[in-house]
Image 1 (spheres, rainbow, N blue to C red):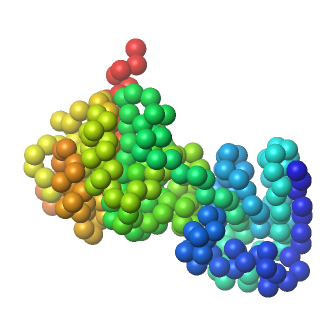
Image 2 (image 1 turned 180 degrees about the vertical axis):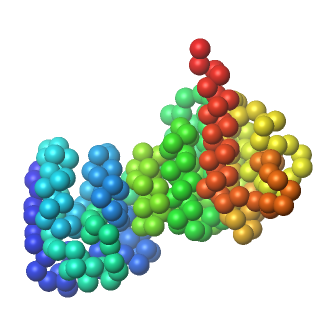
Length: 276
């Protein structure tokens, strides 16, 4: 196992293709790779258990990451491509603050059965439906990690949390959060119900129950939809409860990241009472 340092000599080098094609997310998805962008996100990638393919960064950052790399190369080979930031920006095609990038491998994602078996009770899951904004999805991922969610279910109409912008918005939290990608979120929620997990729709236009009146101590999955269209009718039908955040009457709804923070904080607050 080793660290190989390669100065960038040609922007057309085949091994740099993942960095030249950062806007071609489908290609990365097919290769089961993702881009980590920024010093903190790359640091968290190096600290994680996910495989690291390569780094692309100015030489001074290589020295800063040396302790993490020394631990890494005990178990895997990593290539670090080095160049000054202006060269890296020419290669990637956009401006970067630090010029620090990394390529990691998307892990083998768990199934519903896997996360049910691995999660302690009371289980706390989250799910996203029709959430296409990578930045907003990244914020939801970060909130899930912050509030101890055991797994995030990503519906078939949502973006991948391994898109570059989602990884960046999550600040690398996606490296620690189990993600389940499902072919049908409605079917997945019905499977959770069969396993005793109740699904709670974060639905701003319901008058049935507010967040403060909802039991979040039981095994549950909180479902979030897009800002524009909310949760789709099929997914709503698969939920056991529709719950709203109490708000002033002139405010229609919250950004999905803010709504996730409110719901997950309340779940954490309620569950904290279980600990003596």
